[in-house]
Image (cartoon, rainbow, N blue to C red; front, side):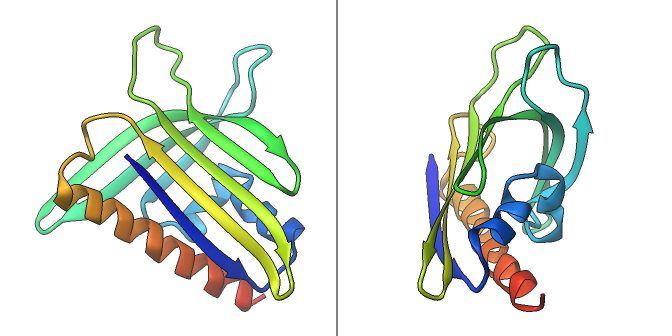
Length: 147
């Protein structure tokens, strides 16, 4: 499954990148991301975080913990975070990519979430995940507009 969102934000690429290039900042604007804790990286590996995702479908809540590493950090244009567990087991891929381009009114942000597992399957759960991504884009716009 892949979800892509584009939004034009009234801020410079550098300012937007401060919020999308560091997973620790995501809970400020993305309600899907409930908790983020930076973890010690394995020698030679990129910066990494333990992330708790939470979504609710009616009375049912789903939660998922995963370790994400920043695999691309091209300031202020591209940040990519990929699932990077260190337990030796095979895990479903999660990839979050943010691409930024300067435009006349500020910055165009293109965020792509790619998921290859079974937790978020089915039309209902896909819609819930898509709704979280859309609300996150609106919250990011509001956060940048207030500053």
